[in-house]
Image (cartoon, rainbow, N blue to C red):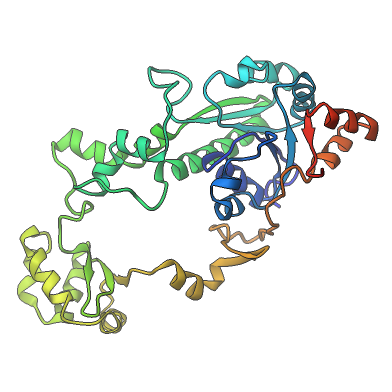
Length: 365
């Protein structure tokens, strides 16, 4: 287990924080999901998404607004390695549970905050969601000339990856320096980071890369004769040459990056079925692949999918020579509360009193 022995307290909800902590859990970290009495909003908003984002975790319910709840959190934090949270800037600090308070009892803590716009700046207190961050960062403009709603929450997912990488890097730094770290991750900045190449291109040349924006025929999506779609990614000339030879159109060799060729290519692709194009690509190898649907992926990518509980989920994408990830289903709300409190040294009587005061919830009536 790559992260065996690392204890993570995850106070976050919805997508970015839970995805981040799930990646750490997949790699062997002990992740304790700390939920409010109402639970992570994703449990009720889209339960199937919750299941996909919270495997390999434990759940404890603590009301952090109570003095007893704060004390429980501090006892957990004292021996934790990582804390992940997604509250508005300053919220946990107002409860006496911010980084400055926690590092006094655990100087080696790695404390990661994931918010829309970061801890500082004019937008730090603004509400927002993935679509807003993708819009403000220029992501939607880069994706399509006419802005669309992406089917994937790009800013959320990007910030989860950035947070996980930053936490892992901080753990390595701590091994070398014996010091903790505070990490400020912004979903807006993560989305901005994802289009960094386009920012660099425009700032230096005053124009966008037309190839990657779908303005050029050699890198585009086309409809086949049978109404199905396929992608052409013949950016390198050798692949474009193979494509031209495949369709018997060597007269197009010098028009690889000619945007006026798009209508002609649409006509050409309409002339064959998806199956025919797949056969030609296997023979000529010109970077042409079908656009798959989710049901097709579930049927065809079984090596990349694992059954977790009753759901099919994607395995951790990296394959390690020394480690194989194991997968446990998502926790029920508060199902580990009793065991975690017992581990902290609370007696059955104390746990009962905490429950009667509604400072905790253990998943039982």
